[in-house]
Image (cartoon, rainbow, N blue to C red; front, top):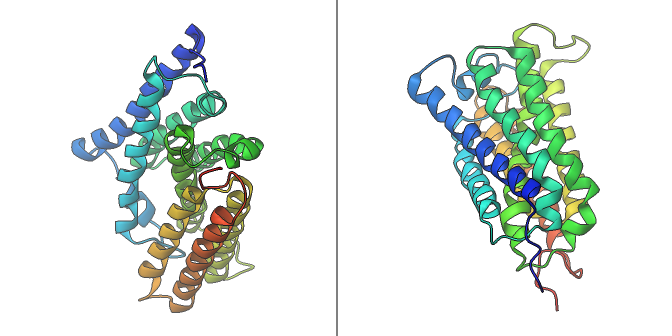
Length: 265
């Protein structure tokens, strides 16, 4: 097959992708080493009496950042052709990278409303092309580079944001006393977990890519570990939810269907 060389405008978009990935990674490192404001973990732990995730779970950002660098560097190379996946995710990924980068700033200075807008916005701009392009994504062969270097890195990010966004919302609502009193905090936490599970299975069913659900299961396991000492029913709910997501994702992503997470004939 001939390679469709990127146009000048497409190459400009690709360089912006690379620049925003570098920004998102650099701002987190600058915040950590310079020590200004709160870290992401400190922000999340500030009002986590309703639902919390073990601190070690945030280490997944190392894997996510590595994947995003692969995604960005690959398409910045002029010999990388312009594919449907690169084109479809280009601008949405730029918005998402700006969002997660500015979220670090907002969390550092405790701009609570901004953190909610940024994290949900970053998630939504990734889910839209994932869902609207679900057929094309699920049709990618196992060996397709776009599967491993575009869909997988962005799915990992979207999956983690699927866990982090409702956690962010509940944390802020708890800290400000805005969690509706009609239900107990534990029930609100369980409802949030149920929504996360539903979204995880729905998106995985559409795109047939397990990468989206892996960080969700990881985050739910982190909630199980964190909640064992103070709220065992909630911890067990988180564990059960993580198992459901993992098993469901495996069945949905690897079931025998042409073009789905396996080499095509």
